[in-house]
Amino acid sequence: MTVAVIPFKPRNPKTRLSCVLDEQEREAFAEAMLLDVVGAVRDADCQAVILSTELFDSDLVQVTIKDMGLSDATNEYLSCAVTDVLIIMADIPLADRESIKRVTGTKKDMAVVPGRGGGTNVIYVKEPARFHVDYYGGSYLKHMRIAAECGLSCDVIDSFRLHTDIDEKEDLAELLLHGSGKSRAFLEEKGFSLTTENGRVGVERKR
Amino acid sequence: MTVAVIPFKPRNPKTRLSCVLDEQEREAFAEAMLLDVVGAVRDADCQAVILSTELFDSDLVQVTIKDMGLSDATNEYLSCAVTDVLIIMADIPLADRESIKRVTGTKKDMAVVPGRGGGTNVIYVKEPARFHVDYYGGSYLKHMRIAAECGLSCDVIDSFRLHTDIDEKEDLAELLLHGSGKSRAFLEEKGFSLTTENGRVGVERKR
Image 1: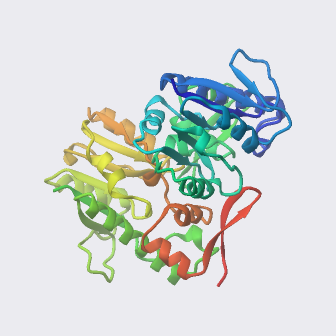
Image 2: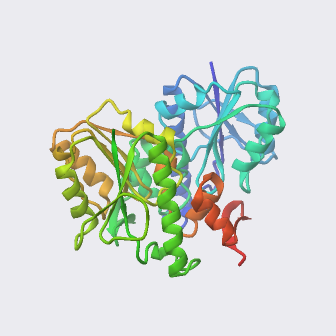
């Protein structure tokens, strides 16, 4: 069974949403998105493992690696992995069974889904010990280069559901438009709704 | 053969790019993107027809409908169409054969690809006279509603290549990251390149 590793930052996450959500709300929202991603990877027949640098209150299986950044912690995990591994970000709540299956169904050695703005939202590697990650700063191009250097053939999966990371206020519109899980319900509960201004859809918060 | 209708505005297009491109450059850039889309639909075995409200200098097949908005002009075309029709926006230069084939290969009556921010970037209808479009102001949800009202089953195709419309400066990063056609070459020729700031990829123009 494919293990889906989901790096997660439980404390003070998603600071670029501070304009519309306070710290406690951002923590609850980040966890709602995480649960949506966990649900999606399970629907896609993967086993979810949360990779965090501190333990947090949850029933989910957690691997906790202290005092490390996201890349180092993930590489630590990859070097010991015995099955194929899916590394999927916790802030892509539009992820669904079908999009993840397109990733894990690759015929190549690995597959990548770029995030908006040059990041990497999903990586799937059949032989994890042969690959290493390097997040931050245009990681998509870096990962393509690392794959080539490691002699691994690499698919790029074309999915807007996996491409859409929720970082900023305007991204919330995508979640209200295309989401159906806990994170969308959280936003609605907090009074967020879609608005239309100058022909574009945005969001507003009413309470 | 599927006809691919590409609505196009030749004069003073893409005003939200005025901060980095002057009017003449925006017209050239819009035409480069159009040519990329034309190339992609032809690769996907469609016949490209440009739908415009004024004639412009080009060898492409043009249907010109004067004094009408995008929606009315498109509906005028749909009501007379005798084959299945793909309506595809001229500002999605990441479009490629594979993503378009996923749209035209739908088993349902029609298929839609949402654009970023609630727009509609691609519509495919097997029986065009049964459908009508209504662009602007969150058109994705409107088109889903119209499909339901017309009794047409509708697929939503999950593609970031077709989802990514190029409207604003930050969108240019996506084109430099994932594009390979004339519009990417245009940007490079004009001195645009990728930058990395605070871990995110952006663009800068050097000349």
